[in-house]
Amino acid sequence: MTRIIAAYLPAAAWAAFVLFVGGLPDVDAPRFLDFPGADKLVHFAMYGVLGVLLMVGHRWTRARHTVVWLLLLVAAMAAGDEVRQGVVPGRSPDAMDWMADVIGAGAGFLVLRTFLGRDQGGRDES
Image 1: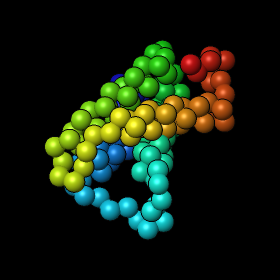
Image 2 (image 1 turned 90 degrees about the horizontal axis):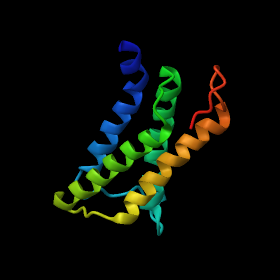
Image 3 (image 1 turned 120 degrees about the vertical axis):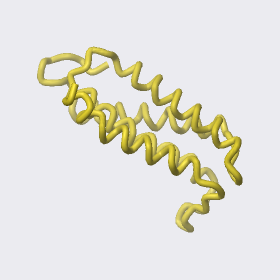
Image 4 (image 1 turned 120 degrees about the horizontal axis):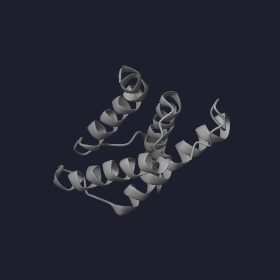
């Protein structure tokens, strides 16, 4: 059990950070992110990091659950965050943000799988 907690702790900490940032009112983006679609890029990147960290935990624990369950968990978290933004001053829920979140997490999964391939036992990660 301790190994599982240690494996997923970085992902849990990052998820907490993502949810914290998602709850901040009136977030002004830095100037270098002042272009159309920049917010979607930020969503993609933040959830991409979460995807990588979840895959690291998945590989380290040699979990039997499939990556699909992790992606569904991320999709639910992102949906909850978007709904919550409906009550945060200066924020609003956006289905396109949710899509960028889920696609970013999926890309994170694929990046790690592409670079690391199969685990040491020869199992396919998906």
